[in-house]
Image 1: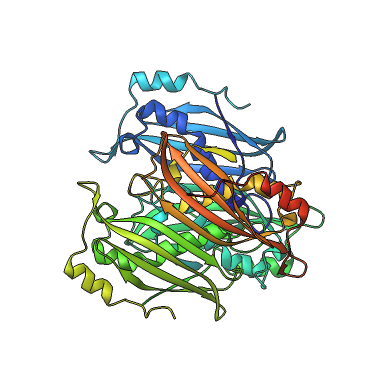
Image 2 (image 1 turned 135 degrees about the vertical axis):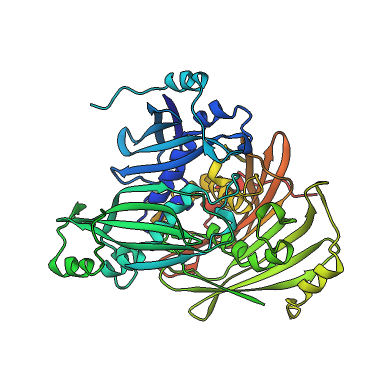
Length: 133
Length: 133
Length: 133
Length: 133
């Protein structure tokens, strides 16, 4: 499991005086960066062989400005050429959002999905989460 | 059904040279603004009795800079105190993304969800989409 | 002079219930896109031989959600390898922001600034603004 | 002087494969948050008696994805009801951007600027930068 701590930024608030919902999708992308490093250790973006197929976010409670948010991230499932990342965000010890992202291993040359190699599968498996009850 | 035309902005691109995925969640929020007007004709944000409970976005094809995107939006389902909005985005005549948002009618005073009145249900029903086959 | 009409988006508001200031820098970038087209008619971002050297924004009045903003953009000065773009934003007929951007003609191959050709200077000159009194 | 460390986020890149310029204005706002705390210790945004009158950003070198950015922030000048904040951003030990922001002490009740009290001036003065040579 990966843990990212994010301090909400003022420009991420909206007129409801909480963090705007669209921001959370961005934070979750940021929380996936350690996974991006598995696929592109150089962190040169053009070397990153991943595309995003789907996101889901559940907004569980309002997220406040002024308090740090902790995002826990792990792998929920590993498929043939794709995998599912699961995120849970906490603020003040309370769950405020959760979500999933489906990332596809992608060959930019052929513009097609590519099977996950055994080496990649093994590295992802290290971060597998227990199945949700 | 509501139609929003969005011209992608340069700062919405990312290092993959396409529109960043997190941007689409923001565009879909913008595409819901005619629905916000049903709930807050003044468009004073503090008068808007809606919170977002959940979003889903499927990224169907890469979205390019330089070409307009058309987003079609309608109501997929109406519940007791919430409703589901469905979005489909097209670029160059091709579907590039689709998604859903669950919005909850919310009473900021009591900080609790509030049943949709008959008047609100009727206004939402005008924009009901056919069931997906 | 170029004119861009922008409808403020809900996620562009902040906790002051107005449009966040950092958003205006993005709108002004968007208002420069017709100028980008002069340099890269294809609008392929990798073909755009321009970098941004400096921006200035004066926030003259609060920008509200719910009302369209009009941004007028022209060329304030043309140098050897750079030029200055000036923007003025209006809402409800009133000036709400103004700003400048210094764009440098850039050769990505040699990673150095490049003189503006006569053809480019002529195209920019079409949009020259009168000197500020 | 205040120091903020920012890890660039993937969605902050643009099609030039560097960090988009408009992002830096947002980072600088974030770098001013310790100053916001002087004016609103609660960090309740509605208690913050400050508006932004002007920003300037000089983009000195391209900012890369994958490497931390350090932003040093201090007070450049203190006026009657406003003050100037100066920011310098470094990446890999090299200056990549610098900028200024003019913040105005503002009374939201009367919608007018308000003189800085002696107590506020003293707290700002602690962070005064040496004059630029």
